[in-house]
Image 1 (cartoon, one colour):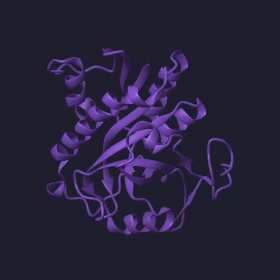
Image 2 (spheres, rainbow, N blue to C red):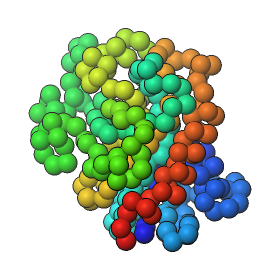
Image 3 (cartoon, rainbow, N blue to C red):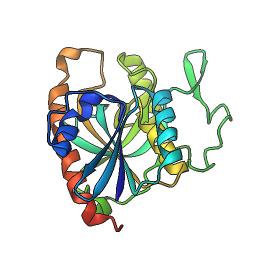
Image 4 (cartoon, one colour):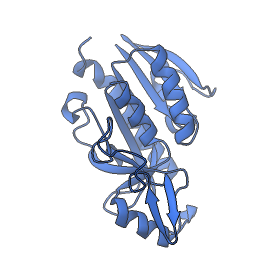
Length: 233
C-alpha cells in the first residue's frame, strides 16, 4: 500500500511523523518517504496557501500512484457547534475569494462566467470528496463544508458576507487545491482538520492551536493504523 500525506506546515503533523518513525521527528523537511509496517508513506509539506499546495500536489501525483491521499491540518470554524480542538472531515470545498469586486459586492468566477460549475471535477461549483466514511474508518468524524481562501477572514462584515454566500462550516488555505488535484487524478482522498479557532474579529488570544494539533495527530495516527484494514492491495 502507498499513501500520500499532505500538510501545509510541518508542526501540524510533527507528532504523527514522530509516532510512525519511532523517533523525535525534530528535523523539518519538504518531502520524505517513511516505511511503516507494510505501508510506504510519502509525506509532503507544501507550505501555506492554494498555490503552494497545487504545485506540490501536482509534483507528487505526476510521479507516483497512491492508494489514498490524506490532507491533515488545522482550520478555523464559522460554527460554535464545532468545539475548539474537534477533529472534522471536510467533504466539500469551494474557493471563496477567486473573482472580482463589484462595488461592495464580490462576484466569484462562476458568477463571472469564467468557470462552468458542472465541468469536471466540479459539481454545481463545488469540489466534493470522492470516498466513503465507512471505507476508511472515519465515520465518527463530523462531516463539514469548507471554503479555501488566500486571505483568512477576521472582520465581521466580511465574515457575514461569506457565510451568506457559501454557508461554510470551516475555512482553510489549502483544502480546495488538495481536493482538485486528487479529483483530477482520480486518487481517493480524505481531508481531516482540527479546529484551532473560531472565525470572528481576529483575536489570537482565544485560539487553541496546541489542542487542535494534539487532537489532529491522535486521529491521524488512528487513521494510518486502520487504513490497511480498509484498503485492498
